Amino acid sequence: MATIDQIDKSRVPQHVAIIMDGNGRWAKAQGYDRSVGHKAGVDSLHTTLEAASQIGIKHLTVYTFSTENWNRPKQEIDTLMNLISFAIQHETEGMIKNGVRLRVIGDFDRLPEEARNRLTQCMNDTAKGEKISLNLALSYSSRWEITRMVQEAAQAAAAGTLKPEDIDENYVSSHLTTRDIPDPELLIRTGGEERISNYLLWQIAYSELYFCDTYWPDFSAENLYEAIVDYQQRERRFGKTSAQIQEENK
Image (cartoon, rainbow, N blue to C red):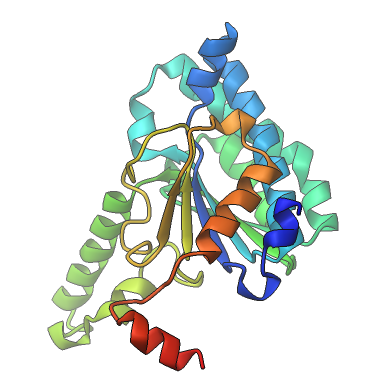
């Protein structure tokens, strides 16, 4: 049986987050410059987005560029930003046609002007997309996001518009960059590393974690389907016992 046919379409996760790791190592193994790996990674994202949409995933959030990535060599940063601008311009028409809505989470103002303008235009052009939301985590880190939320809460408290008792889990969630996106049920990391790397730390509190050795440029629709099949074989208890979950599912 093909892997896609093993997927229970009634239990597909609505939100999948991905740490797209291994572009540079893939390029090095092929004898290429790191920039070639990043370009190949764009193709893998295109393939993964199509596959995710096909099986009914509604939100795909991908770690595109972290706040820590600003510490990389300037030439690599410039290459990445130019690649993002080019890819967005090239993909916009297809995204509109296929019902894809683009969103960006992260420190948007820190991006170069051309990248900001291209992304803003694409977000406006795809705003009516209802089949799947592609969320790019750009200039993003979870610690940055949570720090910003705390600063905003402190400012509101100082202004007298927020009381300590008003701050609960719902308040925190509603003041993060993912405020209108459901928490991911599944987090995938490629490239063989097994860490979270400052990504969606609040949102993945109850996400299932899936690590694979495949470098991101080699990640295919089949790899995504394998991750979904693995996810569907797990029991999600949210602090309850197996007996409780089985009783609820009767």
